[in-house]
Amino acid sequence: MLHLHGFVPLPATAACVPFYPRTLTHPTPPCTLHARWAVKLDKLASYKKHHDEIWAEVAGGLRRAGIQQLTTWQLPSTNRLVMYITTSGVPDLGPALGPGSKYREDPRCVEWEDLMDSFFEGGDWTLMSEIHSSDIEWNTSLAKHAE
Image (cartoon, rainbow, N blue to C red; front, side, top):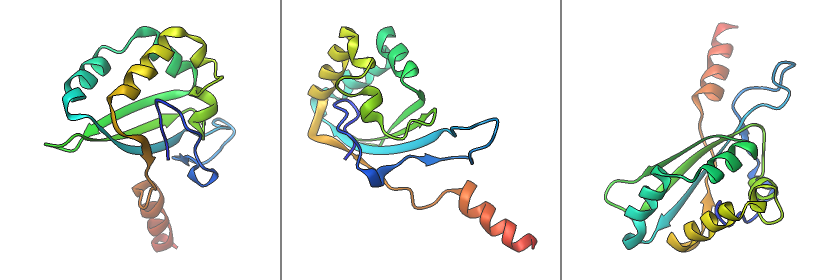
C-alpha cells in the first residue's frame, strides 16, 4: 500500500518504474508511481480546492524531495482518484516524505499531510502495478520486427 500523505513505506516489490534507461547523462532515471484511493464524498470539493491552492511550503518540499510531476485524476461521478507521480529517481516515497524526512521538518508540510489524511476514505492509498507501457512493449516489438 502507498499512503502518500501518511507515507507508509512501499513494499520492496513496489519499486518505481524507470521510464528511460540509466545512462551517463541520466545516472538516476526518473521513476513513475501510480496509486488510487478514495476521498470522503463530503470532502471532495475541499480536497480539490486545497490542491488548486497548494501551500508554497508543500510544493517546495515535494520538489526538494524529488517529486518532479504529480497529476491526479478523478473517475467521473465518483470519489475515486488516481495519482501519477514522476520522481527524480526516488523509488520509495517513505524515506523522502515520511516521518523523519526533511520534508516533515516543515510544520506546514506536517499540517498539510494531516489535513489531507482527514479527507481520505478507508485509509491508505493503493499502489497500482503497471501492466503495459508503450515506451517499453511497443519499442520491444518494433525492435524485434526491425531485425
